[in-house]
Structure formats: structure tokens, C-alpha cells
Length: 81
Image 1 (spheres, helix red, strand yellow):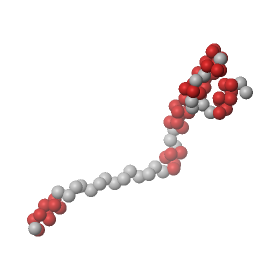
Image 2 (image 1 turned 180 degrees about the vertical axis):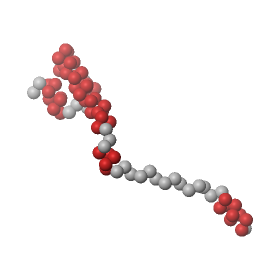
Image 3 (image 1 turned 120 degrees about the vertical axis):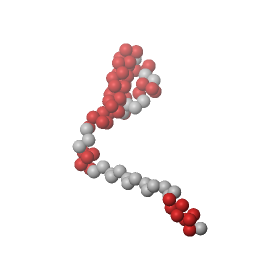
Image 4 (image 1 turned 120 degrees about the horizontal axis):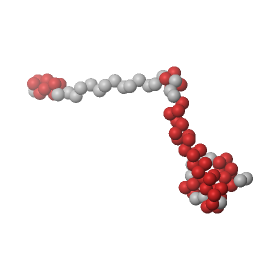
């Protein structure tokens, strides 16, 4: 039985690697600000496209897909209130 115990110890899995340290606030603050811009630019691009469609075809032709993701202020601006 003692031999089985040493064999089990020899087959024990290797220890897990240490965890990656949590990012410091200084590293987060120093991160480039443009990382979030592509998502922030989508509503602006969508707004401009919806605005052009509303001018070209009329605001009543805008679909739910045209205004999805726009803010309430942008939708109000499209309607002309």
C-alpha cells in the first residue's frame, strides 16, 4: 500500500499558476481613451444616417432599426420637436 501512495503522489497534477494581478487604478487611468470610441461613434453615425433618410424620404419612413440605439434627444431632434 505504501508503494501506491508514492505512485499517487508522483502523478499529482502540477500546481496551478498564480493569478494575474488585478490592474492598478493608475494603469486604468493611463489607458488610451480611444478604446471606447468605436462603440460611442455608432449612435452618431446611425443618427446621421437616420437624419439623412428623414430629410430625403420623410421622418415617417424611419423604421425601428433606423432609430434603435439612438438617445431620446436624438430621436426628438429627428422628429423636429
